[in-house]
Image (tube, rainbow, N blue to C red; front, side):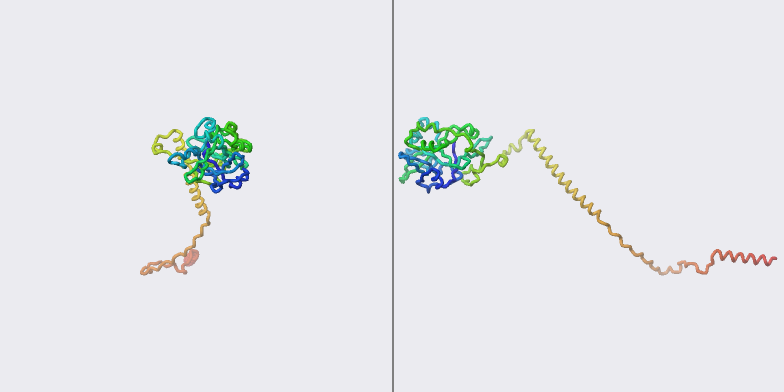
Length: 343
């Protein structure tokens, strides 16, 4: 299946590459995200082998649908035409496959790979930026106002081996000018061109890589849509779990994971507290290392005089008191004087 393409090339550049003129360029608008119902350039050819570019609407509407009373031109009949359907007798494409074949030009196309419960977008393009030429069939619907509406469906086939990881189907890519001209030539019946509906392998020029999921929204039209996204840069969104899953019994692995997370948080808290404690201790050490100031000597207080008790204070002995040596001399003199009287 091919449900989204990219074509940001100006119409003048497309005319140069296809070497023909566009009949209705005002309907074309370059986009990085082309979806069904958008208008895109298509290479067509008349019976005189004159090539031209027609801006067509993506979504095949057969010309006979205008016979319906509702005439609902907004109804998309088909965005793809399977190669197997063209080889068969399917009514929708049985007439147009004979001589109303065209080539849709694009810078690349998007495809989604299924991974578990989600789809991952990939982008397929030429490495040198050359336009992809996709095989398609078209029809012309005459509207009530008399104007003609060109609509197309891209032809798809079984995917090549190198791209089979992505999707079981892929668009038919016409790789050279001869194949392109044979496909659009209305003189060639379908049997002459049916062998062109084959898959294309990835090679030195054709590339495929993962892109942003922003391409899922048609309104996104940024150049970032065609930029390769590495696996490690893909943001993993948390799974949405019901309230029953939240309160339900957890498996052993979930319990171990919770225990590990709790221990990890406890270790982080402990490390943070230890760090704070070390900071406090460092501050205390700095305080102890500061020199302590010497105490200022205080003057002794003078004794206060007490009234009424002055007579009881003992006075020191008079300076006339004789020493012990003088007393012994006086005693010796008295002794000697007594002896003299006796004699």
